[in-house]
Image (cartoon, rainbow, N blue to C red; front, side):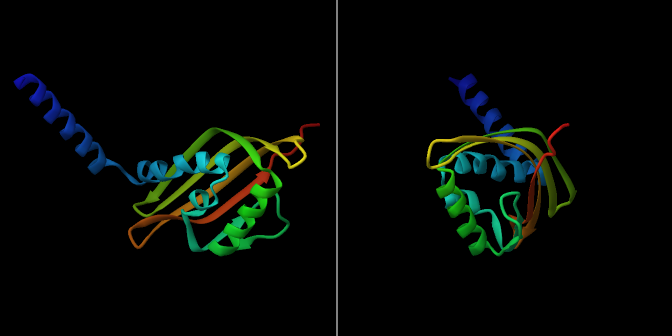
Amino acid sequence: MKRSIAALCALVLVVLAAAILAGPVEEVAQIAGPRLKAFQEGDVDGYTAAFADNAVLNSSFSAFRIEGKEAIRAYITELFQMYPRRHAFARQQAMRAYNDDLVISNSYTMLNATDQQGKVTAFQLRSSTTWAKLGGRWQIVDSHTSRLPVAP
């Protein structure tokens, strides 16, 4: 019994130490992770929650940038309606912290999007997302996604 209690106390201390020692990259990763699931499930609020009120989104599906959280929410809602089913697989993810309140993440993504007629289109994408800690909360302030060039 004493060993179990000691092991439990040690586990609690390790978990607490990990939380205290987590840096900006780890903090952003905890927030960013569930966004992929929200995207695939069509959860607009879950996907857009991390955007700052004055965030900017440059999407390969739009000719012009989308400015502001509400405009981004409307854009994502329309995108989810156009492609009711989506499956994304990210690879070569990289996150870099430049100080305690700025993180840049980059990745390549294979997106299979199914339109309302059931046609599946594969998109090879690259993205860059800038996270800033504003008012003690990590938020996306700029996000850019573009299609990879087609190899000759």
